[in-house]
Structure formats: C-alpha cells, structure tokens
Amino acid sequence: MDHFSYQNGELFVEQTSAQSICDQFGSPAYVYSERTLTENYRTFESAFAGINPLICFSIKSCSNLSVLKHLVSLGSGMDVVSGGELFRALKAGVSTDKIVFAGVGKSHDELRYAIESGVYLFNIESEPELERLAALAEEAGRTVKAAIRINPDISDAGTHAKTSTGGRHTKFGVPLERARVLFCSDLYPFVDITGIHIHLGSPIPSTETYLRAIDRVEALIDEVESQGAKIELLNIGGGYPAAYHTDNTVPQSISSIGEQISERLQRLRNKGKTFIIEPGRSISANSGILLTSVEYVKQGWDREITILNAGMNILLRPTLYNADHVIWPASCQGFNGHWSELISAQTETQCTDIVGPICETGDYFALGRQMPPMQSGDLIAVFSCGAYSMSMASQYNSRVRPAEVMVSGNDCRLIRQRESYEDLISHEYGLM
Ligand SMILES: *Cc1c(COP(=O)(O)O)cnc(C)c1O
Image 1 (tube, rainbow, N blue to C red):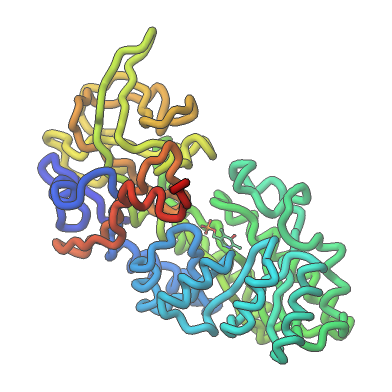
Image 2 (cartoon, rainbow, N blue to C red; image 1 turned 90 degrees about the vertical axis):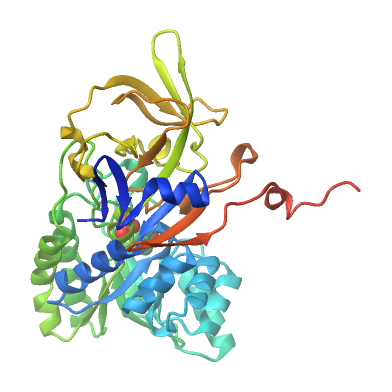
C-alpha cells in the first residue's frame, strides 16, 4: 500500500497536503512519497529473500537523482540502459559492483565509459555487441563480466505490444538458438561470459510467464554446462506489476510473485548460482503522482472536455500505451481513504474527456471518463505516476518540464526545479 490518501476530503501525500505542495511549488508537479519508495524496495528484499538477489533498480522508470540516492541509501543497485543513466547512477553514489548495463545499441563511447567505470555486468544483446565489447575491453586491458540476454521467444506475456520484450518478433536479446555457442566460445579472452539475462516486458501480469522463461533458461544452463561452459549468474530482469486500479483489479502481490519465482529458482541456487532482479515500475509507479490544474472546462459538439495544464509531453503513457490512470480532484468532500477506494466514493459524476494543452489529438489522459464536476483552478491528481512518467517528459510545444517534489512525512523538498523559458533554448545557437 502506498501513502496517498484522502483525509477529510483532502488528498495527502504522507502527512503533507497536496494543495500545500502546489501552493509552495506550483502545478503541474510530480510528487513522490519517500516512505512508499522505501517500503516498495523492502518488499522486494523480503519477497525474493529465498534467492538473495542483487536488486538493481531500473533507472529509466524514474530517473531523478534524489530518488536514486534514496534507493542507494537502502542498498539498491542500478540497472542502466545508456551512458546517461550510467552517469546518473555514478552521481547517485551507487557502488560500481552493483551496476548492470543493458540495451540493444550500446555505442563505442558508452561501452568505453562503462568499462572504465568498472560496472559489474554487461547484459549483451547481440554477437556484434559482444565483439565490440571484447575489442574495447582488450584495448583497456581489463576483463569484464557479461551476461547474454536471451530472447526466449515468449510473445504472449500479456502486456501491451509496445512493452512486450521477450517475443521472437522484438529487437531484444539473442535468439535462444543462437546463444548456445556463445557460452562455450573462447574467442573473447577479455570477456567472462558468465551469466544469462532475460527481461520479458513490462508489466507482466502473470508469474507463469516468468516461470516458463526460467524453465527454458534452466534447460539451456544444463545443456551448455554439460558442454563445459560455466554459468554463475541468472538475471531475471524486471516487469513486476504496479497498482493502477482503474478497472478495479488488484495485481498479484510482489510477495507472492517473489516467493513463486524464488521457489522455482531453488535448484539453481543449490547449484551455487547467484541472481539479479531489475525492478523499476513495481518500486516507483505507486511512489509518485502527478498534480495538475484545470485550465478550462468547455463544451464540444457532443461532449464535455476538461483541459488541464499538463499534457502528453508531461505524461505520455495514456496515448503511447493506452494506459489507464486513476484521475481525481485533490479535493473530494467527505471522502476518507486510499485513492484506490475512490471508485466507491459517494460522488455524483459526469462524463468528460480529460485532455492537455498540446496541439495533438492524441494529447489526452482519459476519454469519456466519469468524473465529479470540475472547474477552472481545481487541483487534480493523476495516480500511479512514479514510473515512465517524468522520465519520458519532453518539451514538445516548447512547454517546460514540471517540478518534482519529494515528500517525507510532513516535510517536502523540491528535487527538480520547474524549467524556465530560458531552459528551453539553452542549448541552441541563435542567429546573432
Ligand atoms: C525497463 C527494464 C527493466 C524494468 O522494467 P520494469 O517493468 O519497470 O520493472 C528491467 N530490465 C531491463 C533490461 C529493462 O529494459
């Protein structure tokens, strides 16, 4: 459970009211609950205790330095997918033996940077990438550790087509068929090919999907080890669910997912293998909300349209993935309770499209949504916005990216300044 609840009709983030946050820092703003981040991280530790994995938080889900630093203080490692994310991880102070580096397109510069930094593990996605890494490691005179990311051909992961990453039609990983020979190869003296990596998509609604992939990987390990290879570690990636609740369904708990996966991995654990998990969304999504304000409520031909001061440049998920977020006024008279219970709030509702100010038809957060009556100036909360939200924000339409705020109890702290118009042009050369 996260710490976004209504008390006497007012939304609170831990012990801080949403209205007071926006009075201080303006809107739109992303607001995170530090306590929720902590609890979600600890939930992973205990859920997977049976395999005692290295937990590497997926930076791309929520990249703010203060968020990363907090997770590092809890003991988290980091999963990075670019040189920029590696830079963030190092700035956040994570020790390099807790950094894993994935991504299909690692450049020469990114690989060199990671080799020099001494990251713990390269998750390799193709033969040409392995060759490039081998050459650069040799050049640097350093031996590096690699896991081969397997494409296990699991295409029915039950997630949106754009977030399914384990199917044979996707760009990710080395096809299982082709991967075998890599583990037995001695062509690359500076690369210790010691692990297997999978990441199937995000979010994965059924634990069965992980278990099926683990069975395939386990068979592969048996096979290549019988041919003389030595596999030390298995990285089972991320993709664990978060609560969005618009359809009133609660995802399987992380505790039960972790226990089932850990149980299935016991045979490998007994053979001395070590494990890595890369949760992103499941730690960050329910740790953040977006606070935004109503600019106008207008009447269209056949519908009411509510226009917010935040649009697809600030929260892309609804239009990119058809993502459904619970959206509700931060003030809801008489309601006491967690946001997930809003559906049962005794409020009169009406149908409206909830859209942003961007000049695109796809700029919406929800179409045809039942909402309490709203008017200009009302503060609105979009829930479950800690993952793939601010980290995807852009300046499209030359709109500034919003502020980010961290709440801890009744203390709130600006952790990213709202951008200014000067920021918009700060990298450009004018004609003068
Ligand atoms: C994005 C990503 C993750 C995190 O996925 P979540 O669904 O946010 O847990 C983990 N590993 C890799 C390689 C990724 O690309």
